[in-house]
Length: 187
Ligand code: SF4
Ligand code: SF4
Image (cartoon, rainbow, N blue to C red; front, side, top):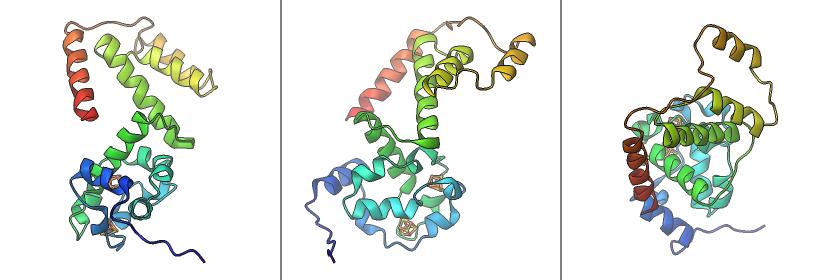
């Protein structure tokens, strides 16, 4: 049987420590984070298991989980952790890394990630969400063009959904804010 040992010089862990300002080895796997997580029931890998994967150098596998996208960033785990480990921040960093590396997850995680990207694209372009365009692209990307079509038609008939996009005044400022956030993420 292979014995898995943790190596403090592992660049994967050092990279994470740099990003988080905290050491993943501080986690002693008590499971309190997972016990309090409101979304754990839907995740493919429990929050404490994500930390364990990183302790074992399984960054790539962690980046491919649905869990990092299903995390609601509620910070319950960070508040409960007896070791002061900020798991919510870790999840955020993992999502950023996954995007930077162009890693796509599967299942519900992919849907969340896709929706996030389309929402942000819409903000960049119009300064606000253009729901009609977002939903069309979302459905096409998931190869399900008529998903929620009836609901969409009902909303259009009640004037709740604009057929055409509307660019807000100050959309350039919104774009500048988003570009500055992107620069901070790349640091
Ligand atoms: S609560 Fe903290 S120490 Fe316990 S498993 Fe979660 S991250 Fe690790
Ligand atoms: S921040 Fe994410 S992992 Fe932590 S308790 Fe909330 S949903 Fe669960």
